Length: 490
Image 1: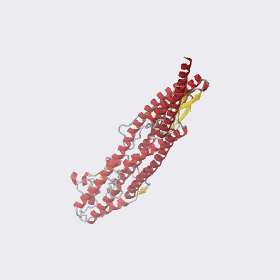
Image 2 (image 1 turned 90 degrees about the vertical axis):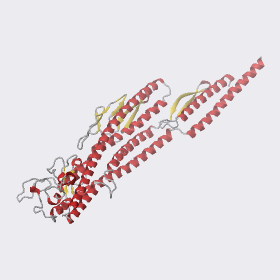
Image 3 (image 1 turned 30 degrees about the horizontal axis):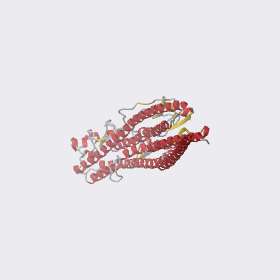
Image 4 (image 1 turned 135 degrees about the vertical axis):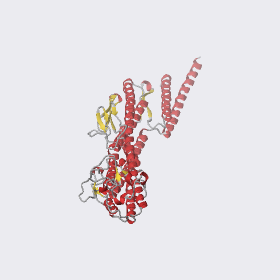
């Protein structure tokens, strides 16, 4: 090999080593970037044994990335549902001493028992009213909490849709640069990292799948098959409901004109924050609201008064508990949306409102004498109180859509409601823990295969420094040789 050829080889080796060191420096600079992949120079040998960097590749594993996107969507779904159920469980409190409807129903029953043993004591009657007010207030507050969770979910759906559209726009800009760059050559690895980062964020919002095409082009679809991006981003739209009342149906989410969440259809997204929020708004919270509404309806029904005339003709009237539709009694076994938010203690028995708690014992709470049970006004009259205790424990019909059984007592239904919510929360917690673990492992596997290792980069740096030094020594040796030749010929 001639001196000139050797010099060219050494110079090309020096240039390649310098470029490789620059790539290692890029890797180290992005060590804390979760979307950064390891960059590697691909070296080829040309004419005369010279070397040069043909291109810069990145560590990439499409299968591991797809696995992470899927697991991330699933984990976000369960976490979203768990957060909402945790909020709803605050309406229960401690299982034994909390202010749940189940505990307060038991307290009301205990207050009635005490009144039955001392019916002539108006103060004991007032304690029944106090327990009833606590129960009505708890149902009101629980209904407000459920509505708040639904309203927040609806607002969060709007935020999620806005984020999806923003991410699709960002993806489109990056994808265009990558496709155009692929046709012209150049280092596109950082752009590809950024595009994958957008996909990771998008997968948290909704389940997605991707298809790779020529020129590094990528199309995005929902996990149900609806197009989100194909050359250009498709519009995802949603109209939030400012005042989402109990029983009201929230609006659907559309992608490319196709409903993907919040409506009865066959192309609903199955995972992601969006799917979780829709499940909370349209399924979980409404079911719990129905349970509260049925408890409220059962209370109004249990404490209703009936015409005590010799020939009864009047309809049942609201007694201790009433609501906006009073004094009429709600239809048996049929949910009235939002009833838990309307139930209240009849002011005619509330001392703080000028009412008389003795009417609980005697009847006639509605103000009509035809509903009086204690016609003689006996102070020791307990028939009506005992009747109310019996009604609280009686089996009655409930709407099956509330998911706590078709029949049962007020106590059993209220306890079943607590059990339903807690079981749902515990299941969601277990599922969220599992899904998050899977997601973390998928992320760790992806990071291991494609991420940047500081130890590895430092090892590469030392090796490249030796290569650089060796090439430099070769050039120095050739330079010394040329200098000696010039000195001899001179």
